[in-house]
Length: 277
Image (cartoon, rainbow, N blue to C red; front, side, top):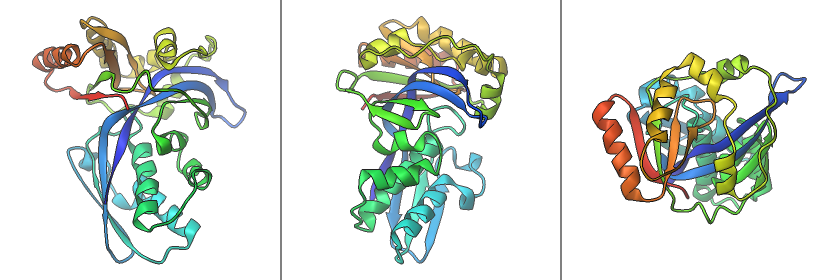
C-alpha cells in the first residue's frame, strides 16, 4: 500500500503573541498540494523504516524519524501485534516550512489504519497526531483548514475554490530552524487573520515570520521577488517558517513559465510544480 504525504503550505500566517508556556499563538490558513513525499508499507517483523529519495541524507537516524514515532504511537494505541515494513521516499526538502516531517507522520497514521484494517475514527487519530507535532493534526486530513493556538486548533474551510489551482514551490536549499525564526520574531501583533474565503484570506493575509526568516536566509527575499514578478500570479508568499516560498497562478502555463525562468537562472534552487488539492 502507498500513501502520499501531501506538501503543506501556509497561505497566510499571523503571529499574535507568545503564550506563557513559550509557544507562540498563531492564526494560519493551511492548504495542501497534490504532491509530496511517498510512503509505502509491506509485511515485516516489528516496525522498520527505510528512507530513500533525494533528501534522505538530510534526515539522519531513521529510528528518530517522525514516521517511526507515528507508527509506534499508533501501534501502542490500538494494541497491534502485527509488524510493518515502512519505506519513505523523501522528495521534499527538510526544515523547509512545507510540513515534510509532519505530513510524513500524518500519512503514516492514515496508511497504517488501512494496512492493519483498523477502523480508527478521526478524533482518535487527531489525539495521536497532536502528540507528534503542532502541524500533524492539520496534515492528517490534508484539506484546507484554519489553524489557531499553536496551529493545532482547527476549523475546516471550504477549499473547493482553491482545488486545482496551479502552484509553484521554490526553496533555495537552505534549511531554516523553526525555533530560530520564532525567536527572531519582533513580538509585534499586526492583527488577526481575515475571516473570508480561503483565496481572499490568502490575498489579504501575510506571513509574520517572513522578516525574521529573511534575516536568517536572505535568499528568501530573492525568491519572493522572482515569484512576485511572474506573469499570471495570483498570490505569492513564504510558507511556514521558511525557507520555501510559493506562488499560486491563474494557469498551469503561467506556472510552468515561471518555473522555467527560475530554473534557467537558479538551477540550484529546488522547485515543485504542482496544484492545490
